[in-house]
Image (cartoon, rainbow, N blue to C red; front, top):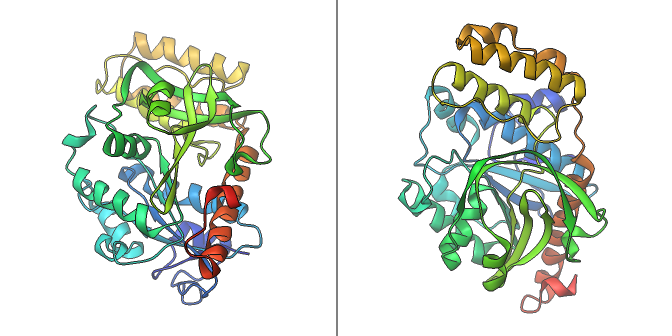
Length: 347
């Protein structure tokens, strides 16, 4: 069934893609038996709409015949420009409303990682309120990248560890534990990562987390833990990414280098470009390091390289999210009959 967007007008890019009315009059009230998912989108303004689309598309393809509706929220303390504030005002609901609502599931994204200790961020208090609300008011909570780090820091005091370089690219991970969320995926999966920090398997295991997929190069990929009523699902990577997302991030970081906003030229995403694409980008790097000027972006070979990119992780991402939707549906069915006995092992 088609994904439904609750709360008012449908974001224009999704309305255009699905040929829906922008006002969303026929798409804002979810049916009674619909799975309700809150998407708390905390990414910076330049990626705000892209992130919406990535999760909309993933949930739309993963839900199958299960009716799913999504309602949009964002942490209120995040810095926003005029366009970002207007977009939130037009298409997002108030954060205070979220805490008085009931959802089957919630997806919480990360945001720009500028400080190692997340507890010093201005949004920390709201994020903790959100995590504690999710434990008691959802069947499952998905946490992406920085949000996953914040969750384990708050619950168990597990710190994130800085990396020598950005963990950036597409990394193979091995399914190391059988679980309903990994049902039907191959033993070896590939997911994008884009982060400067990590939480480590030994620290997670000591605190009762179960690692489901792990990469020899990128470390822990997917891990879970039951917290009160909610199964917390943590991704250090980004299965929701579209095929061009890493390319956009790489281009952004190159521009920052040319603008002297960063001192070093960014590393190329791992296992993402083909041989010819990597050759073109290395040639551009040689020019950029010799002539450091933003005007060079006019000859950045992005269009030529973009034509060669493929989303090699979509099938695995779709399978994991399909399993997640099925988990929510099973919990919804169980809670209507056996509210005290719904557990992961019963599905």
